[in-house]
Image (cartoon, rainbow, N blue to C red; front, side, top):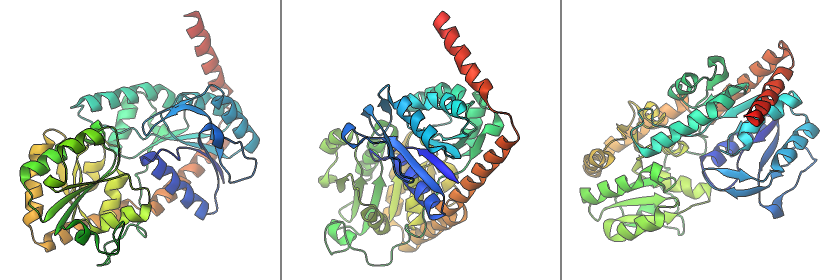
Length: 406
């Protein structure tokens, strides 16, 4: 099968990890993958060899959204026409190209699949959750014209169906983690920068970890407030791994004197695995989520986990970890931090083993890609028995005329 994959390679975010892991696994299964992504002008090229990248120019890109240049659509259309893949899978980048893809693929008669990443809080209890709800409303009319949209949880599926996407066009395929890479601590691990174990490096008997973006929707300040209020003592350290717009401000109020260690962005995957393997507790205080890969990675590493019920995270962690409401995270976190500080190691191991088992049962990369291949085949089979979609192109043309006449 030949798959044209439209996704992200930079800057680092969950979409980047998702695209990298899925496409690598597809290629390991002898599927042909052409990776189409945005790149800086000096890196742009339209490669003609199978398996190489196609790069699209942009005006601006971030961890959240991308603004392409006008000619990006032409480059994308030409690339798809030249390569003639069996299908197009767009790991949506929150760019204007996302809205053009149904028309482009209808014109080329190519099946189109999307993975829709925007996180959400189903109860709309914050500004961040209202913003994400707006994104769902904005995208739903366009996703209705994709052959299928992949989401990570049943609640996301219900949300899109409520907004008008046909039920048969929304599939739930949860995120998956490579459980052969993300494994429990093998007793002794090198640190990020030296030969001593991480706990020794950080002078910690109990190590608590957050990995992710430092931004408003991730709600890291609630974690920092709870940590400070809990007065965790000199034997406990909180390691913050990641970068984002709020990091400089938060670092001025929460620092080493509070037992908080800011590592910043850690690009090396093995270093991030080492940190998780050294951790006793992983904490994810997000206000909105899809299905956090960071949470799954921590669970696979046998770490006791605390997370809010934003998105699908509560569903993943239910019964094997601590699930918090997205309201008053600081107040809920404080007693749990103190409890995990004082509890016996056997309690931490028990939580970690249950979390690892949940990943093995439901959230492995292998199962994810097997489900994805089955979906690809089902869509290809379905299209063999349906007429060519010139009617969709006509719908878009009529819409344009109506807007112009407006």
